[in-house]
Length: 356
Image (cartoon, rainbow, N blue to C red; front, top):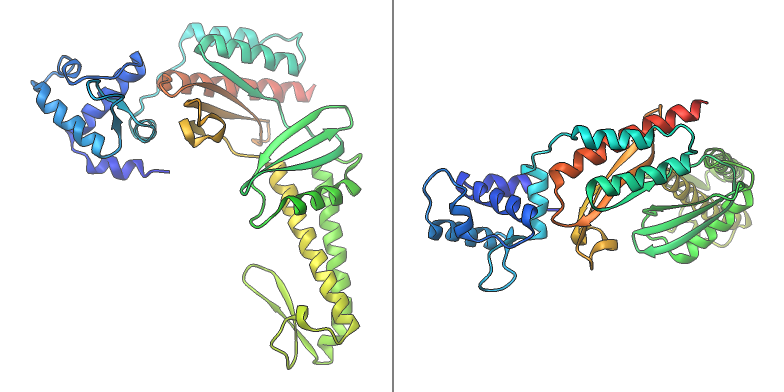
């Protein structure tokens, strides 16, 4: 991510103003913006040549680009990101837009799923873009868990609930995990999962880790008390059993049956700790952001932007999200408050219905 504030601080007032006007004109029309167009919008007398020189400087900074030689300039993805981060003036939701969204969300006869579909359709109509509404994360009992590897730093967890509801969540697994370790994690969790919610399953896994920790302590105690081995803990809370007189860890020691067993128990304990971390990351889900163009892998080829806001329950816990997908030249100043307003409204309604 670029340091938008640092780049903006390096620009003088004239460069900032030219940049702002280029972006705003582009977001309004979708067309490249020429220097002669900008001369008509400045109160101070600036020649087209002066503005053209400023635009060339902005192009060298990577903030503007030109579709072809004779065209005007358009903001680059980097330029749009800087504009959104530092110069965007967010408006307010108009009365008509507010009333349309509130009327749809106020449909007391609809169940939550139907209500969210209706809100999504209204949001799409109000913004003139595609919309997405993620349903509340369910605390229903689980029937099955599956992990799917998407990339080295992304994985998908599929939760099949006993009521037939299927939920997908994207999360970042701990570093160094492989597709096989994800399958192993799923198999282990499924041996405990059925009939439990995610929160209940997390408690069960922690208890299992505690039992394994006690088992290791029991086997190692005699070795430690006799002075044959010592415990050593590092800053990352991982533990090692070091055998006296040997520089190697227990992985390299094969003389003692107890030590071999402890080694296997250690391996198993670390796997369970990784699985517990999987579960916690999957339960938390992915945070919400504003993505522009290739910042989101899903939209990198289509050149689209995603404006998304979370909605929360009465305990201020994120349970879902509301968003709008459109071209990178979205009217961010109008879209952002609409998405935010809709998310807050949905969160309040879902929370109220959960109390009934």
